[in-house]
Length: 197
Image 1 (cartoon, rainbow, N blue to C red):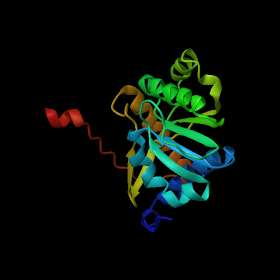
Image 2 (image 1 turned 90 degrees about the horizontal axis):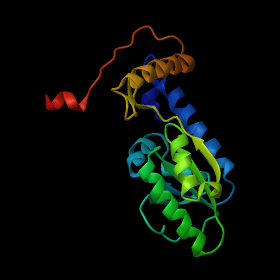
Image 3 (image 1 turned 30 degrees about the vertical axis):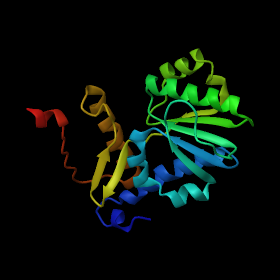
């Protein structure tokens, strides 16, 4: 437990624990030993919520970065892909799944889309002939990450578009739901493009 997250007026540890609980529930659906294949972009945000010890408690034995061709050898029952909903990543996943099918013993494949499930990505997997290989295809709403007692980070690539403003309202409601009504919120928007100007 991150003690520094419970010192502020709003107990951000509640939010962090809710996200961890959702991750544990997903991992528990995949019975047996596991290897996680990470979209490289997600390793940082996940490191803030789930340390290796939490993953190890849920039978995660190996972790790899998502790359083309074959996955490194792992004697596990389940292979779980943690990825953003990007079409180019679906091509790499299909290549990994097809190479694993040729390698040997049957494995159970699962995919967790972060932060949203994508019908386009599922269609791409279907077109590549591997959609049926996945036992679980779910989404994991990793949008707000507590950094400190009074600091949240919005981990959304579209945070500076109109859709991002709608998501900001959704996240604010989630914060209220987990912590009660907050008396004062200070928004600080930082856009990388503002630096260039």
